[in-house]
Amino acid sequence: MNKRYLVFLAVLASLALTMSSCLFDSEDSALSSWLSDQGMPDTYKVQTLSIGDLTPLSAEVFLDSTPRGANDRALFGQSANIQHDMVLDFGFDSLLLSTLKNADSAASFLFFRLLPSLYKSQYFPKDSFPLEEDLAVTVSWKLDRSKKSSFLEDIMEITDKDWYKSLSKWKPDASVDTTYSISIGKKDSTLTLVMPHALIDSIRKDVSLCRLQLRLSAPDAKRVYRFYGPNYVYKPQFRITTLSDTLFMYRNLAPFRVADAIKSNEECSDCQVLHGGVFDSMVVEFPSEPIMKGLADFYGDEFPYTVGDGDDVRQAVVLAQMTFPRDDSKGFSELGHPIQVVVGSFVDSLDKEIRRMEEYKVNRKGVVENGHPNMVFYEGDSLTLQVTFGMRNFINKASDGRTFKMMMRLGYPVLQDKDSSYTNYITSKGDTSYVFFSQFDYARYDFTEIMKKPATLKLWLASKRGDE
Image (cartoon, rainbow, N blue to C red):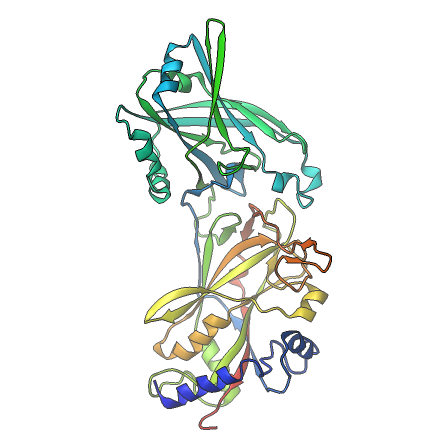
């Protein structure tokens, strides 16, 4: 690494708390306000550069279809073209199975309680209750048996990761279609599903230790229903009832674990659609030439720098923002709140490309006046995302011909769109002020047309020229 680069890094480090790393143009009235909020003087000159007409080379969506744990909140239903199947893992000991086999009759039920932190929240749409639906459900199951004494303990030792992986190759022993009529009000949060007789009959055939993997699918549901998972007091429970002569007995079983198995029902394979509540991501790629030309025209010399170790050290990116045109008309949001867009950039780390999540720096005055610029389902017609880490790395490494890549994902709903703290906090009265909702919105956002239009890159640059 050349000496000039080391000196420049040292200078930047020494100025970290004192330079006015302007997040805004020096003539912008928001500059002094922001610097004051950060406890920094406004004496350091930072130049700005805007580069427009940046049309993406590509925008590739990676749909998330990996089953994941639902141990805190179980999911079941369909929303925004994403189907959520609930899969539960149970174990039955020999005493219970013996009681079942000797009973004159038996039945089984699945009990849920809706997640109160969502449905009883003041932020859940008040006009959504009661939730009413005739729900067509497919109940499918797999049974494994053994006389080995450690059978159930061995099942519990299966890692969650291995279990989730096995669900992608689900081949049930049997399945039954049934219909349930659901009607839930804000005060009534209980849901009972009567399991098919074929299921309990299959379980009670043998007294051997038994493992039940139970899957519920409702691909035509009007929404995703969210329940307690097995880590809560009111968890989904599998109840077995038996009747022998005049003796009625029942037993409730909690699952070892619960999974959310995801399936996308999107019909357009080339569309740039992201879904909330899952980990869909979209990687957007921009050409390097317009960015390098904009820098060359701005400074009056050639970019990228190709001398020595290849790192271009003539400037440092203090802040970088990419602004896209925005159109929410093809989106879907259940909760009705703005949703943040989370950003990651691709940077070098030990000669490997990694994705680094961007740290959002807040323009406090601008947010109070106009709201956060990194939200969809919001007023206005633009989406502005900060890509500082990625652009800093890109400019320094662009001599190898690389393109600029960024990653986008839907985050949490924003409850206070003009609160500049950008985090939940305790007020002076000791109350919690919620900027973000703790539940994901199972939303859908279509970026297809947006990615056909040019974006604008704005850079805030602390420059070092030659040997100065």
